[in-house]
Length: 427
Image 1 (cartoon, rainbow, N blue to C red):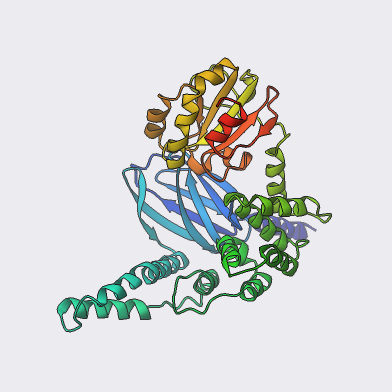
Image 2: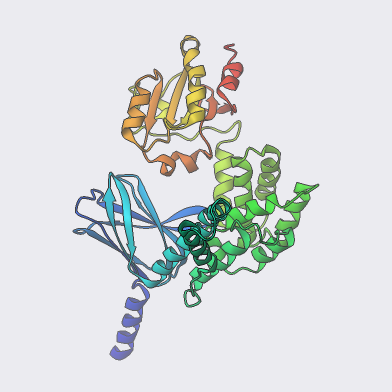
């Protein structure tokens, strides 16, 4: 009996041991202590684990099998970097210059292969066409002309054997087929993409290819009926399956990002009316949109370092109406639109309307330099697009506006600053 119990105990120990490890080495000058590890679902980063620095390194144990893109995020400096997992140990080290990660060394074979592959892909897409254009301006018998020919031939024929790396091979094959810019490539059809989306294995969701492939599907044309094309795609992938629901979620977010309101409304309604079990990806999309639709109570936001107020959170701000602005000091559209709000701010205060700016900045100096000239309430987590309110409030672009009533109910979602002013009758 003791022997059997010993075997069971050993099995339990093995079952909770790491599937693989991620080891990161940083220089002593790199300040962050904590790192977050993310996996990928479609185009959404999913927090896998957190780890605290020990010496100049981090070691993260990943308990579940995972093959695909991964991301490291250092929240204290708002720095991130991507790499891959072949469900095997990962090891990398890097230098730092002016607060940025530089000279990343991939010390495991799969990431080394992936890095070299992407380097070749980028040169083929962006450098090779330029070299071919330059060739027309130089005689082939000159030293420079010969050097051009040599480099063109090298890039044209360069390739890597990545067959022993399943994810690298998957990514390379499908990136080349569906996304690589190549004038000689046969044009894609809707049928090509549907065939890929219905037959691909689970690496599709973890590859970062899904969203750009869906955008490629929408751009196949000319099409006389976009809705019919989308319906055909969703029927093929079956929205009652996890794959189909992830595709539907991605499409809804694409429509939101590109301001395709009618399509977003149609397919968000379809998603909300599904009677089957909904996967986490689609459920999150539905919930976020529901929380930020007209008539919903705007979710509260606890301030981090708010200026021009003693309020601790958004709901602590007492006013008849509130204008919420998601913006950034580096956003050119914000630069063009905020003066319109500033011009009417005194009139807003006279009507007991408060403006609350939630910034997606990540550089403290840039943010502080800008907000010192903005008289309304301002706050920022200084995490850029990693800010908590990106997903919380379904923010896809800056500036984004919401108008709330005294009870924090959403009463308008204007597209531009001029629309805000018009809605509030301040013209």
